[in-house]
Length: 594
Image (cartoon, rainbow, N blue to C red; front, side):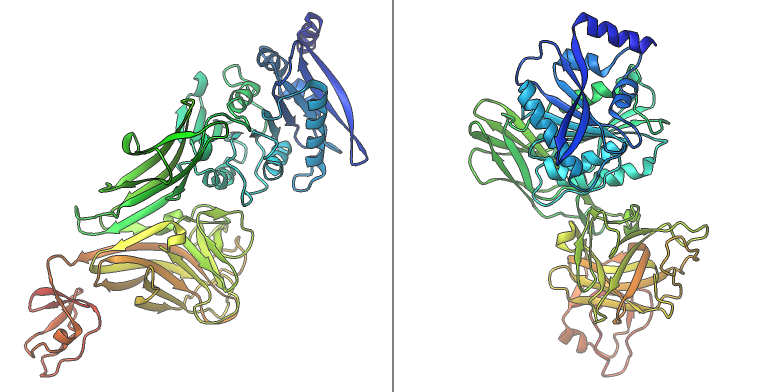
């Protein structure tokens, strides 16, 4: 009753008009509610917000967006923008097709005709199923809508090729399928070129339990934001400190399709990349990192582009090509920024995040297996038909991470890959290739690769081949074959015991970049599940002598040779055998056979 009285008072006061309207779209009469402030003026923004499943426009407007202290009507009146609440057919939305996309387009045309809204400042959002429709609209209407908001509405699409950077706000409670939010946002974070680590503000707006996570700025200065609401369920937040209507407007109002500030995009390196260097403590060195960017200005010229490593200025470019070099970089996470300044003094910033790691002794690679239906960063897969690179997600079949849910299971997540045609080395997963975004540099020494592997759908089991390969040439320096004895059975909810941990020892004789390659069997539809992968450096070779094969073969009979595990591999005969490449102990000194 109190809400009704408040609305009537607003109408009597003449602040705004609230009414329903109809429009015919593809031969069907469609309806919507609209909020139009008095004294709106021309070239004002438009917000379109869509209700959830089994709701309607009136419910969205008068219940979900209203409390005793504030309403969407008041937000519209203060900021002077039009807000439209469309009605879905049968209280639902077409979240993948074009039926309701055409409806949204028709609403835009009607608002442009009736109220001369600013076509460069049109925003769209939705709750629940309406949020799903919003994600669908990103790929189909990004040329008409400047920014997007989803409230408790999971993504149903991933970014299409050629899509511009997309400003995106997602609002969700932790009691409402919270575990699925971050995976849904990751493709958009990557697409926008945003840093993969968020800046988080706790106790947001003084509201206990509320956190605002921000990834950005990315390309063209856009951000991806996630408003986390502790213990909130599947509903719109209407708290005085965190009123959803205000949060939507405060996010969207920063964006326009015809922004006057310059556009800037970092083209290399890719955000989320890693450089991993195994070497004796204190000796890890990383290669020079070249940073390249593009920049333009729609209403003027780009005067300069400044490059930063964090806050440290690396270079200033006043003409194309825009590039800088980071030299002597230290371990840790680096935020690389490109700041473009135009002739009007306006600026835009693009950022990428790069991690430099120098593992003290071991690296657990499988910790990145934590998101179902994705391919983790650093990995590349091939199944004889399709090549996939990480980070990417949205896969429902083929090579990807699977989540296992049985009451008894050997691991919770595993990387699945397969071989469709059955030819040798035609089904594989590799860590460390250039398109996976991770470089794995290994110093000379003795290494151990610990792994847990099983089959997914091979009741007769299929052998798996592990290789350490040169990153560029693909030449193998060490290999091992293993036949799993556990088959999960093609169903993620099946119970299965933990595979026994296996050990693969190998020597690296030359400093270089390498890849860990795992091949499934040379049979049609052979497969593999990798559940654990840990790379360790058992010992390094520093300040030792190197022998050519000819020198090694000519050693005297008195030279007794051991491997780094203390096992005797040579003889004291007059004609000792040729040793393969590796690291050995000869007369008490370490020797590399190259």
